[in-house]
Length: 136
View: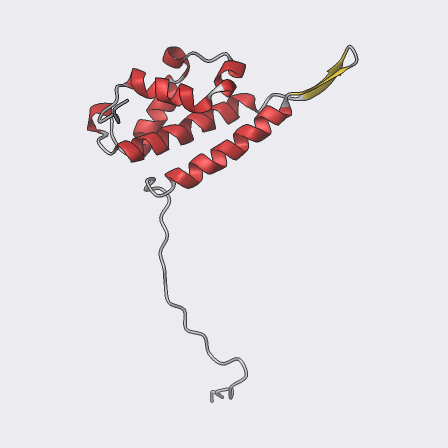
């Protein structure tokens, strides 16, 4: 399969659907209809209004993965554990796993997101045990 050199909104939604895998199935999400807001958030994070202008495929895919997992975590937040008919159902486990996947996607995408910037500054420390300068 050749590496994609461009995406349409539908292709990006399909990519995002694949990133979520079984979690998308658990949520009942379909690629075309369930990812429109996540695609929009991806384009906003990328800094373009038209997907044709998103030419850095690694950046687009990293941001898309992050936005797909953000949407999934948001939808899974209401899942809770319960016991019924003698069986325990631990739905919060899917939420917990999605949070871990989101953290990994955020770590991957941070280098491409201009909202996250760091500045390095050299710090000079004085000798805390040196002589005290008296002021008059």
